[in-house]
Image 1 (cartoon, rainbow, N blue to C red):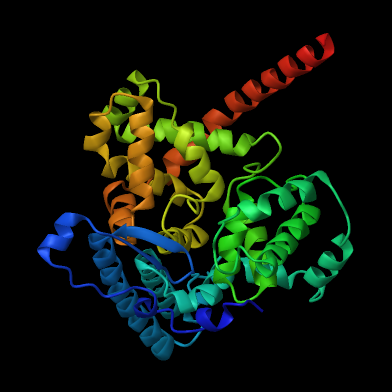
Image 2 (image 1 turned 180 degrees about the vertical axis):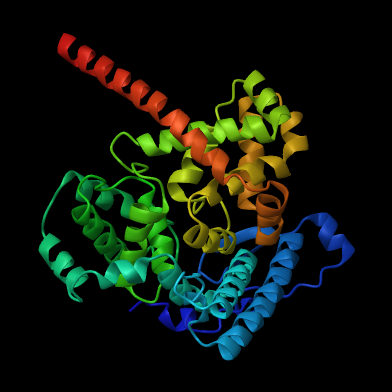
Length: 391
């Protein structure tokens, strides 16, 4: 389907994309900048140490791949589908399913091999089940029905296409733009309440790079917006996103009060960075493989993952943030950190091993913040209407 299909059907091992450097101490100190493409075709720029980190990540991916393939061989190709403990199963089978569930959660947090991502994401996210509830021709019929139709959503989509990962060897081509447009326009007609929101273009673009077919990318986008994330994240007033920002601020205050207090003194609003993180699901901020590792867990464990990752980023740069003097310094620290976070394990270890469970806290905070956010948005709407009437 895609111009880069042959590349994406390879073993996805990093050696084809990352140059093996054995730099001298002098070269390291010179902080030599190198450029190369990662496995998803994105141009990466970093120093020699960054390349060495990526080479280490490559080895981890290969090792993790061997673990997954061993399980595929011993437990069966779709063993991960049988991880729910049903009350109708015998006790021995319950224990087996529970063991599989524990194994699966641990494995997913360590990363799904890129070559297995399409199949495992599609199954575990609920996309396969969602697709099975409609006729096989649903996507094709939807795309045909939307051809030539112009809406506010299609106009915004057309505006955003060339701005979505410019320079990418496939996404930034007529073929890539056409595929991305079909997915986004198709979904805007499937759910007219959401329509299209800026940020979805980046999410859909990465889904296209990972999934084997355009149709599967569409269903992954559907399950993401309809089941995985909280509702109204991408609605006209972004109420769901506003709620998540408030929840994140509360979590930061609870978990890392020193950071929160310092940032408050600087009059730094977390939404300055977190809005993009939550709307684009880190796709514009983190390197592609790190983003995919976050999404591995997101599609299995749900939206709470976004809070874990966002808190981890702040925690990892706590010392630097506490020394910052201006809002611009904070943004610069976080921007540089995320764009050079080439080792997913560094991030996810902090996100899950050091922060701890927050499921109940997140749920309570959402219930607390939602009424306040809706009231504030309603007041803004009324104020805007008053200004319009006065003019």
